Image 1 (cartoon, rainbow, N blue to C red):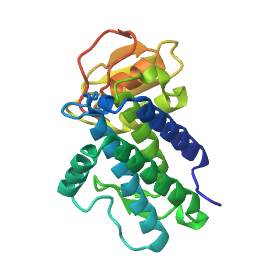
Image 2 (image 1 turned 180 degrees about the vertical axis):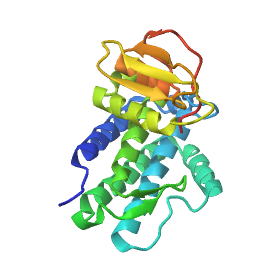
Image 3 (image 1 turned 90 degrees about the vertical axis):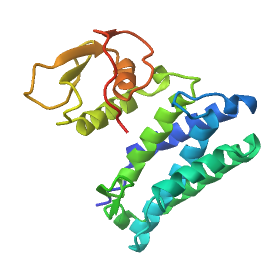
Length: 236
């Protein structure tokens, strides 16, 4: 049976379309304005998303050929490529993004069914099935659409917000720098535990799904949370 992550691929395609639409909405001077990410302009965010697409293509190539192909040649090269991309004229940067997105879409569509279970390694050194590339792209395009500083998590689909909270909960499990926290959707339908279990009674933070996802990923919260708390540790 194929392990092709069809639902996740659909989320990635919708997020890619949302990111491209946001970039096309920005004026050329607007791309030079600050993003939500400290020290990065919107152009840096666009260049980063483009280079991430190429990095994920490397993992798909690894899965298809069996020949190791790291996401990035090195951390230094990754940063250099983002800086170079961000300095491109706006039309060239937009074209760069579309071309990179196209290469990734082609790689995802063309990966044989039997390759989706192949194990590859992320830039952080985790060994994962290549099927996880779909989720890696989902969180990249949806979160960085918000980072362009022209929209909020209210515009991220609820199912993506919930999956982001699942991701954060796993990432923050047993982290000593994360205070025990329970994130709870206002109606009590779902909750997520962050931090080391049993170390202390968790503080319950409740709010809408989009607000919780923004808070957990370290982004601007579009609406109220109860109680209002300081930032959590960095997620990614």
